[in-house]
Length: 131
Image 1 (tube, rainbow, N blue to C red):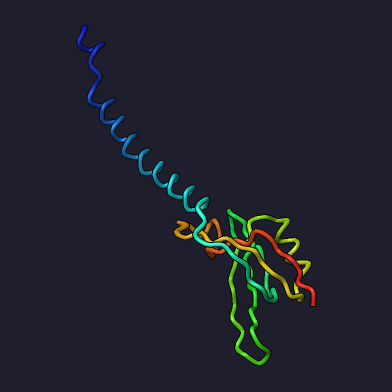
Image 2: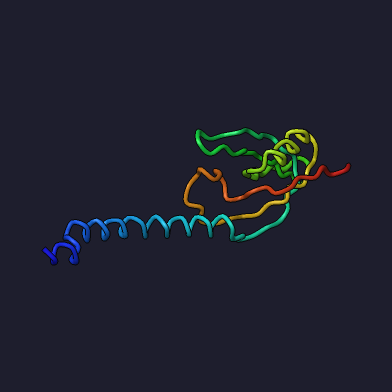
């Protein structure tokens, strides 16, 4: 009778092993995701005209947009795809559509899901350029 009280059963040992085998990968994935979202690979500014900004996502709502970069009149325009998390920044961008703007961004490499944004470029600020 004393052996039953002091020794854990095989079922409880297997349950603990199963929990650890499940818990460790989840914690590692959460740590990796946190690191990818906090670590900035590059940052900078892009200047151009915002062509599109739309809110996307079923669960994780983000704003996805396109900035048209025009270096010289008559040349082929290049598109810069970006993501905005902050609704206040998205509101400023919406107010500046059709005007020449400068977008300050941070690039985060290795984000594991499109739930955080469809691109790796996250816009932090916008300013309207004077002509």
